[in-house]
Image 1 (cartoon, rainbow, N blue to C red):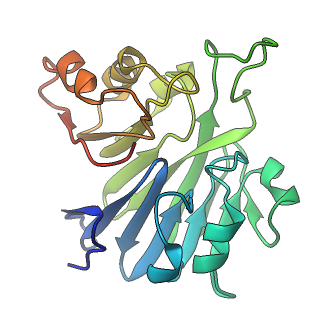
Image 2 (cartoon, rainbow, N blue to C red):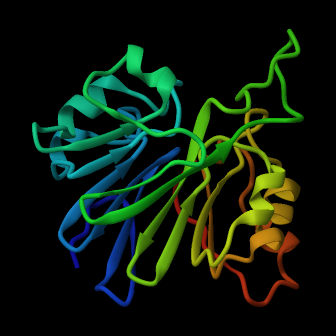
Length: 227
């Protein structure tokens, strides 16, 4: 198994080979599956991306700088890299494939679904949500029989009730921009992932999520360094 010290890495078996998940920090992940390096929201603050493998696929959830970081992206991108972005990202980066909520595509051999990610409760002083509806994406990746859900910056929105057969989920708890632990617990109860990682959790104590889900015996909460 390839690891990238000092990052925490999990290896998860799938019907099509092992999935290796490296927790880079914040909202940033590296997934390795079938020889493909898949990055989520690379961010220079959490890693020196010049030391990491080049990307086969990069998924950007939205346009905020801690998710769309041109410097980190340039370090891992090659002419062969497939880049998926939202529509608002197109002014900051060239050559990306735009996916909108509800779109699905198969890229580098992986089925990818773009799903909604937005706020309803947490808002700026002017009353605008930190993440307005219809702007950002979450992504569901199908890796063998494993369905992996990366929620992006979102609250526990009604669309989560429609999520089916999620094996692994990454849910954000970065206050005030995304979910409280109670919101994340409610979201997890809605679609029942087998493995749940809180991520992008800032100063929120992720152990609170374990306590809130202690009666949900089918959900394994894994805490990794993803503040």
